Length: 603
Image 1 (cartoon, rainbow, N blue to C red):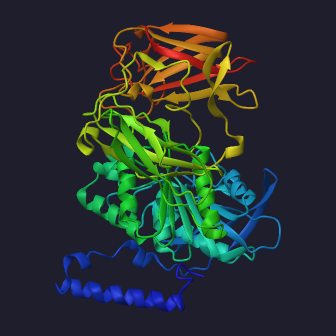
Image 2 (image 1 turned 180 degrees about the vertical axis):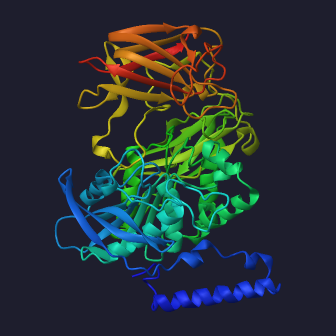
């Protein structure tokens, strides 16, 4: 079966397609077509359908988390007459089936992991995941896809490229052929196949869902496209290419050119501060979609997810592939002002499924989308039965960003649109109700503004993920890293320093109270940072029980972000706190006890 598996006569369609574009080409030479129509063809008209035999070869067996998994190879594409043999993993639930099925596409630099396959199988799905990154990180050739050297490791074509001379191109073809492989498995219901992709895999998912009509549901994660607009090294890499190349890439490979061509319903999964899914670009893609779609955004995260985002994705697949009821509509936020000038949000919620929590994630201040600090304010029902929440302002003339959120009883988080407004311009008479403070995190601060840094994938599953919460320790409420097993080490991140309600400490010392933490590494502005800001590092020892550590500016040394060490021959220290918008706290925990963080601020 080919990509045109839902059509008849796939080879005849291929001949007609080639004939049609041959005619279009000749007409364009004689000026008989408009420039737009003449340039509308893409590399996919030539690349699809793939007529080479799949040649499926089952090569091994393994087990993960009690799930039997088989490894295989199949021909994903052909390059210079050489079949590209794709390595993949497949598993299905116990029983005869046929089962609803997921094609899983891993992220950049990763490979097909048994954990991803097992996660879907345990949720009642057959699953195929294939390796598309190929040789790297000393992985064995027997467990990867050995791409042709012309494009091995290159996500984008070289400037003097042949069409399709990049790994993303062949990963897309391997994904489409993966659907062919699934369609040949007796345990797979061909009418119930969905696709899930992470990061670059999410990027690829947009194109696969546009090119293949057999899919019935899609959940791209991050990978929103618009690379030339991204505030990251990837964006700079695209901007440094020629205009001709940028147009070629956008036309053929960017989700921005394919969002309006999606075949199956889309749930977009993203982190609010993600470099590969900037929220403004996310909303641009959402506006392009013509198929049924929703979004789920994890607050304060960068390339990681909340368990509730994963639950939403699973619920999306269950709705569209298992027929598990209708999926709720997205929440909507309406801003207004009370008589005393307090800014109020009314969240309109689809309560067709039992609702657990309704809230608004609020970010204050004129920060870039990647730097914003999101604080969650929970709504409650007012006398009219509407979900209402007060939204504290520092300055009504400053911009705020909002995301309405609803968490259902099954754990699924459904988000409304990201919106940035100046309150004083959209409603009449709002006043400031939040005071600024030198405190970053008070004793009784809950999880809003803090996250546990996790991996990019859907695993670990929501059931096994540690979480942050408030717990009283020795008479003090504290932010506790909560897990059933001793964690050994923790990695927490807060963006509270980027909240407009927090005064900068200027040149004072930073004080931090910790409980049952050993050696601590505190970094500022790790990974992505405000232009002009730099990354600094401070190492110090805490200990058992409540310990107060006072850290002057000189304790924070300038470091190279890549290595995490001071640049060679450079001995510079943090000069003030004005450019600090993020803290990362990495620590070993004491052998016994409760790892927690209390008060943090300047003194």
